Length: 417
Picture 1 (cartoon, one colour):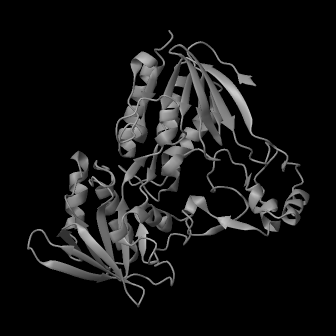
Picture 2 (cartoon, rainbow, N blue to C red):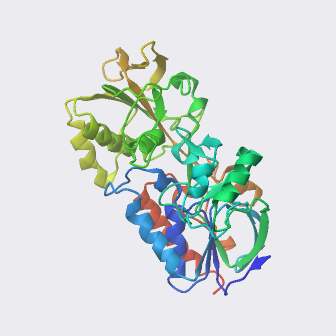
Picture 3 (cartoon, helix red, strand yellow):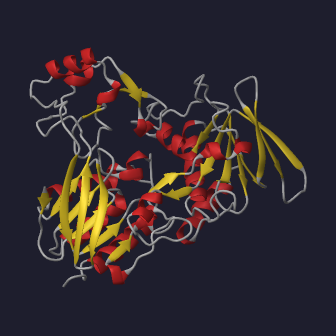
């Protein structure tokens, strides 16, 4: 099967804020655009955030507008649950095979939710990073685009599948769906494949997974989000204690030759932002930030200064050597204070690891012949008509991703003209 478009069509791989920006910028000047995402929804990591810089907006601010622009622009052809299978040809004349995974729910779905009411099987909720459960047929989140349920068929018993089918009066459940391959012809490709949080279990000294009190910064975002696993309450996993003290461990995996050798750029700003979440909910909580350097470039300096003036926030310049789980459910963070030379043992109720950004494309990019640097970030190649955007290009905040995505679109539409 093939999906054809006009001369100069652009393929955008990745449907997060960067991919959406690149796709819309290209389409709104007259180019046909295919935009794909491996997830059952568009929006990427931004959709999982509670707030994002620079305005501390919720994800509805920005994503909703872009989703509407996609719906209203007939030049944009979105494909969810889709990955690149192969790339042949060259600039101006690429032939790309795309593989669409079965959703097991067709376009008849109205997202009424009757199917989920009768579903008896549960799975970990990937959108909430496994901190909650969801039914095996589910709407990824309330703002999901496309606004359609998806079925994890392998997680369902035969009895459950029959109940789901019977509950749907729109005949939207199709358990016979198969993977589908389509071919698109495009002039250029924009790689906007985004990032994954670095695997915190790889850092033995930080004890992630050994105590429920140790979470990652993305887990904190989901906790603070009104549609998250705790409906916006920041509680210690395991016993739901309201924390009276919280530690942040900066550069968890970043700037480390054994893990990610580069600075992940957003981690310090994310921690300062999450300090505002805590302070809104717990005015008297003690906050401890263990850092190597605090990097808040340009316009974020004033934001940092304000939070460093918090009398109940303590900043310790030192790399964390160990985190010790305690019998009462809390942890003790061990580090050497680089300014005083003293060893610090700080007991806290919760600990947040500011894990770094790892480019998500990984080995798949190498197999497809994408130019990548030693850290796995995509390197734009105008000669090949392939361009990097957003966090596929480098670790960056949303504002910077918007700029790089617009630039990638501008370059991509010139190929084949």
